[in-house]
Length: 466
Image 1 (cartoon, rainbow, N blue to C red):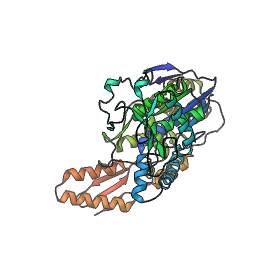
Image 2 (image 1 turned 90 degrees about the vertical axis):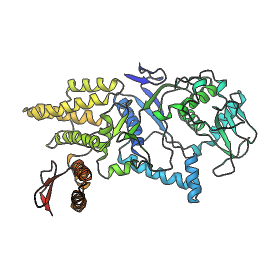
Image 3 (image 1 turned 180 degrees about the vertical axis):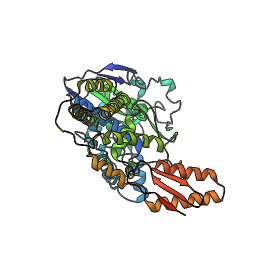
Image 4 (image 1 turned 60 degrees about the vertical axis):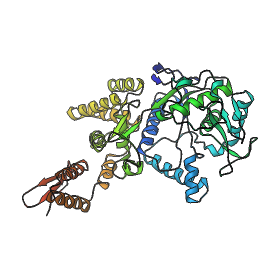
């Protein structure tokens, strides 16, 4: 099994510390808003890792934290005039709803930062006693990055390059402008007592303290989104290794970012898409398939066409199981070996999905009932190893139908398009036609009216609209 280690910037043979056991820590949600599809990519990817490692026989101890102490949570609480944990608890519930619908495997432990203040304070005091941290007038405590000679080894940055492209808060009390906060003195809630006065922890120290508690000072894999590589993961390494005197995580795995229509997702660009929004229209496994079609280390672009491409592929996988199949049977070793080899090569999901598609093609071309039985069992077994084909065929297609665009909505689109055509705004008219096409509705213009039909729907009737 080979995985890409961000620490060495290369694929490496994966060797766990303890045979047949993997200790895995993933930086989880900062709970101040609903989860978006970028979060879905990260956590569905690590769900894949857990599933496939388990499939190979590893016992995976999966820790995914919750960051519930952070400026954005506190700012929202102040704005709404409520306690910080009212905000965090609200969005923890929302997160759990999303993750359950996505069929994410629950972590073995899901620690919250606010429940581990004692562990955090103990770590900060150790760093200070070893002269890796210092307190300043006013009570803030900082990590001294000059004290750790390997700082930058994950992100491959040296100290002279750190402020290039990175926003650093100006604080004249710091030894180095890049030193990061471990403890911030504050009278604003939430705050806790410490030897430096009332305050709250910095973001980076939270994860170091929680990973140490649940996995120890040295463990197998640490991961998260690529955006966390610097400074968050870099800072975790520095404070953890200085505190323990040991190597922190042996392997670092990062998931590449997601864009929407070629642009970074942002509320200001009106292209911010939540998991809830996508699941209103698409079966949860379609989102999983969408991510699997691109390797996890490559950036991915979310468009209406790309999510519909994923739907079409998954439709065909489910369609091939529409007739009866056995839940107990013999697996095709050729397909099994190739499927496993693809995923053992740093989780090459695009190649693995192509192998599943080949299985579907062979099912459709084979006349032997005994061979069809083996192929269908193989398709089901291999797909379920990565979180696909867990629904019944009927339930899957019923979900798609229940989320179809309604006839009233289609009528509104057509009316808006007709008005655009009258005004000779042909670009808008084309955009509406394309949008309906992406929703599975084909328009047919005639001399006196526009009719429509649902694409690839055997039961859809053609409807005339004036």
